[in-house]
Amino acid sequence: MQAKPIHKPWQLLFRVYRHILPLLEQEFAYWYERAKNIPDMELRKQAMASMDSKKFHCQGGSVYASQVIDYKDTLVKLIVAYQTISDYLDNLCDRSTSLDPVDFRQLHYSMQDALTPDAPLRDYYEFREEKDDGGFLSGLVLRCQEMVKKLPSYGDVQQHIVNLSTLYSDLQVYKHIAKEKREEALLTWWDQHKANYPEIKWQEFAAATGSTIGIFALFCLATEPVVDQREIEALHRAYLPWIGGVHILLDYLIDLEEDREGGDLNFVSYYQSDEEAYERLQYFIERAKLSIEQLPHPAFHRMIVEGLLAFYLADQKVNRGQPQIYTISKRLLKKASSFTSFLFYVNSLFVRRKET
Image 1 (cartoon, one colour):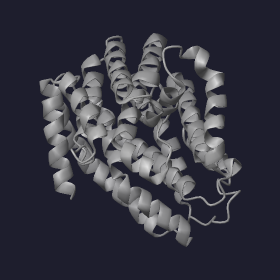
Image 2 (image 1 turned 90 degrees about the vertical axis):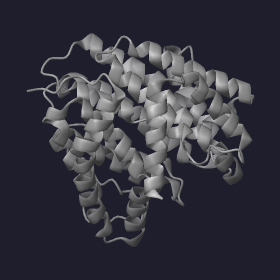
Image 3 (image 1 turned 90 degrees about the horizontal axis):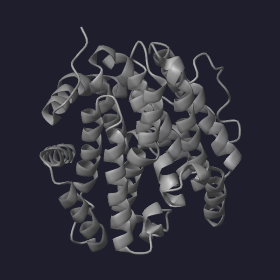
Image 4 (image 1 turned 30 degrees about the vertical axis):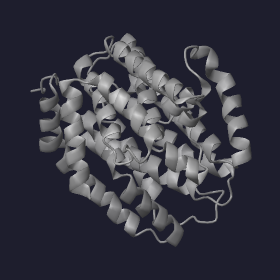
């Protein structure tokens, strides 16, 4: 018997804590143990560092599995494996000394292979010195391939999922190359896509492609025995650029001061003023909510947006000591003010306190 759709925030939180998090902990622990046993010291270091610092990505992504409890085992394993690939490769590229786009591209082929059942494995480390990961990355790819085969309508959504994955990989390649080449590469890439996104700016497109949650939403849709093509396209359009944009623009917002001090790329920094940053983020939130009305089970996706706002705006970086971030964040949260936002905000504070 299939679980009823989620309509209320307490239902979502109950399912996450009761059904999803125990599975996530088990699956995450398995891959963490695999990471600890990677033979190459540098690869081991980066795999463990990514899992230590970015576990919340897997936790957040696995929330999607609460929609379809009948497939929770498959979805949690799939989401944890795919997100672990994403975070591991992000660390490898961040810490790279070569800044070689060919190396970055080769690494990221693993993400598309993971989404393509029976795709042959490649030498993902072909263009770097460190190679022996003890089968860690290929194991993650195979886990994803195994799980997507269990989704009844995966063949119908696969093209859309691979499209999102390819855009994500493009972003990772361009944003990790030499600093003096990044902006030009990103703008050239934007030129190839801007006709499809006339309402947004280049940095907003780049930010939106950096989210993996649209892929997770499509995984869940693929659990349906029959899926209407219009539903797939509506979900794709809602997540890219709107919901994915909200996700990553909020992430960049709270890192604004930190990135400025470190000289790191931050897409929110390209806005001309704090007011423009607020207005564009608010515009993305409004468009995300509008696009959700066209989706199956809109209440769930609405809660995702409210949850993203609560999670990021409850971050300890949002404080009076960083007035630019604090002012914009508080205005966004005030505008969002609803019981759902409040509940997720309190839950985010509780989770963070528990983890410290």
